[in-house]
Image 1: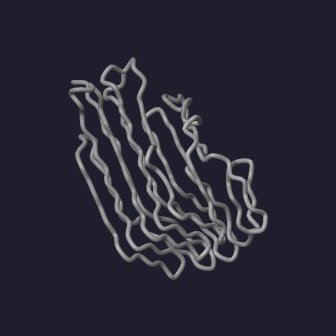
Image 2: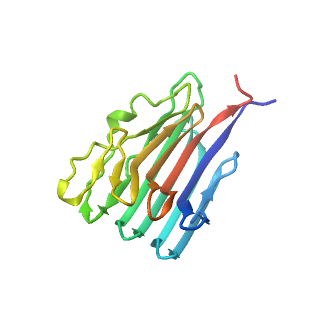
Image 3: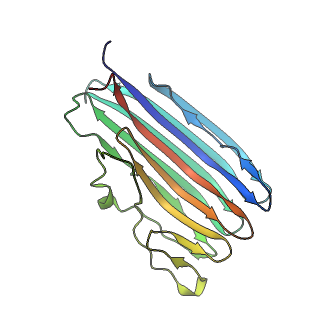
Length: 226
């Protein structure tokens, strides 16, 4: 069998599951994906509202995968843009952008390259507190080709204003009393792909559940394996 590269690229705007005070799924909004052969996919959802809990004006996703003759690399890219995000009136943002690009050299002896440059928040507020969340690119230095799954936040640690009642945990989570925990810029690496989630929520009382905002994953693997 001829050796080939199997592309991987996924992107989604908002998704989740509510367990209290009722049980329901928040279907994946603005999902994009490409097949293992590569290609291009895009999706857009406008004026989304879920039971006055989650809303956004628009969400657009794009995924691509192709081979560059000039670079001799397989490139996969994914972007998510969410406008006017609102979660229970506690988390708001004018814009959320997730961007992840991975390059896998044709020569497997070379290390893959990836970047999340361009991923950012505009006017992000949590419980009324303005948060300037930025990625720490130094934390990505040891995520090139892991032998096992590694999940971490790559957010520069924040200094929170105590007057807003927010709490910062050692694992990078920001806790809002009687709301839940928020993980920003959460980065997942595996031997085959990289993944970025701009916001992951673990909701507590009175609304309980889990949700993600601005998720993208890229790269792929060679087949058959060496």
